[in-house]
Structures are given as C-alpha cells and as structure tokens.
Amino acid sequence: MFQFAEYKNSVYRAMNPALRVVIPILMTIIGFMHTNHLILVSLIVLVVTLLFLGKVELKTIFRYGKMLLTLIPFISIIWIFFHSGGDLLFEFYFIRIYEDGLNMAGIMALRFTSVILSIPLLLGALTQEEFVIGLRKLKIPRTVSVIITMVFKLLPTMESDMAIVKQAQMSRGIEFENIKMREKIKNYILLFVPLLTLTINRMETLSKVIECRGITYKGKKTFYKNIQFKLYDYIMLGVVIGVFSASIYLRSVV
Image 1 (cartoon, one colour):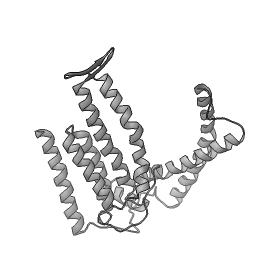
Image 2 (cartoon, one colour):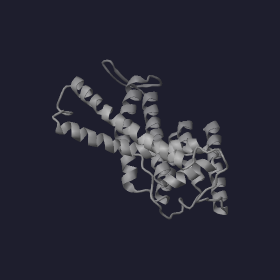
Image 3 (spheres, rainbow, N blue to C red):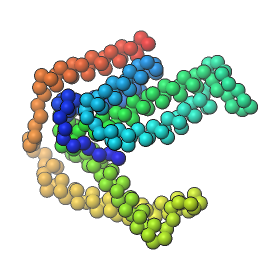
Image 4 (tube, rainbow, N blue to C red):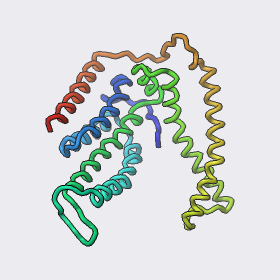
C-alpha cells in the first residue's frame, strides 16, 4: 500500500521536496483543527486539486480511497447512535438519533476523507530519494530519515511476503476462509512466524547496507542530488504559510 512515486514533471512536483513533505502534514493538521463543514469540504477540494496537479496515479488514490468505504460507515454509526446532544430527531425503542450526533458524523466523515487523501499526496508525489532529501531539508537527522523511509519502503514488501506465505500455507491444506473465527485467528497467527523471520533477515541485510554506505558516520555529509530552494519554492512557501495562517484565523472566528 505504501509505495513511493516515480519521476514525473508537474506544477506540484516542481516544488522542493521539503515543501511536498510539509504540505500533506499541514493538510492533516488543518483537517483535525476544524469542525466547520464548509471549511472541511474546501480542504478536500484543495487536496484533490493538489493530487491532480501532482499527477498522482488514480490507482494510488483509489487504493487509499477504499479505506474510506469501511472507515466512514463505522465512524458514522458510532457518532449517530452513541452520541447524545441537541434535539432528538428520531426514536424507536432504545434507538435514539440526536442532532449533534448527525452533525458530528458528517464532520468526522469529512475530516477523515481529507486526512486519508493526504496520504497519497505525500507518498504518491514523492520518489524515495526526494522523500529522504525532503526530510533532511527539514533538519531531521539522517539516521531518522533513513529509518522512516525504510519503514514506508518495507511495508509493501511485507504485504507481498504475507501473500506468498499465505499461499504456501494454503497449498499445505491450511484453511483461512469458511472456518470458525477461533480457527481463523489461530491460522493467521501461524503466518507471522515465517513473516517475522523474513522481515528480520531483510532488516539485517539493510542494516549492513546502511553501515557500508557510511550513513551512521558522524562526519559532514553532502547530497549527491542537492535540490536548492528557488524563487518558485519561496513563492509557494508564502502561499502555504498564508493558507495555514488563514486556517488558524478561521478556527478562532468560525
């Protein structure tokens, strides 16, 4: 699921990698700051526009969008049926639906939509190299930058390993479908032993590669590909600061 992008030319990708790391994070912060429906809808429109300008692949967007199909109904049910406050709109036996519950369900649905769509904006518009450069430009230590990048890099590999191990277990007669939940949990636990072994072996290999490349060396390092801030980046930085400042102001007013 967590896969970095390939090189492409676009208006959004012309920005410095540091800005492309900061913008999705700020979009997420703004999403959690506000409870106004109009502002949250505007935020979703802004995120979708940036996804379009960043030429993020549709399959990447839909991959994360599928999370909303299960997340939003679950959150909505919790807020609608278990939150009391405001006028009572509907009552049937022990089921009560209040105005505040519906309002909060809508807010949380819009909020998580903007947050989930910010993930492909982060990973779908940055290559692995640009992601590391962006973190380093933000003064994050090199070791921490590499660890964060490796985590995102290893997650799809672990997902692939999980599918391979599952197929191997199924070929040996172990069932994962059409069985009792207790047996299903027991069989899935059996998957984690070989998966853990594969992950540990891969991490050991990566640690040796990192050490051989001198990443842990504490001397001064330079970038093979050093992307400097340009006039366009400073203009976009001003726009980002302006949007975030306006968001903070609107939170105190609306």
